[in-house]
Image (cartoon, rainbow, N blue to C red; front, side, top):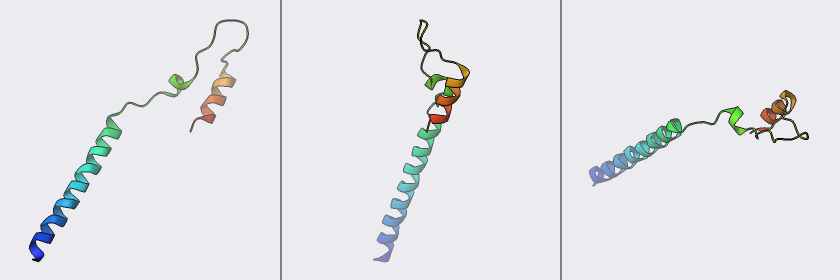
Length: 63
């Protein structure tokens, strides 16, 4: 009876490894956004300006 348990355990760990490899593949294949894309666009007008100081602040607040 020990032989069927070994097969079940091996197939479980093989499946677990397959799922982990698939997760890593999905994570690596996804595109990452550049830091500049995360910044808000500068609105037209004379009020708010997206200066280098403000851009630096936004870069430091991202998680």
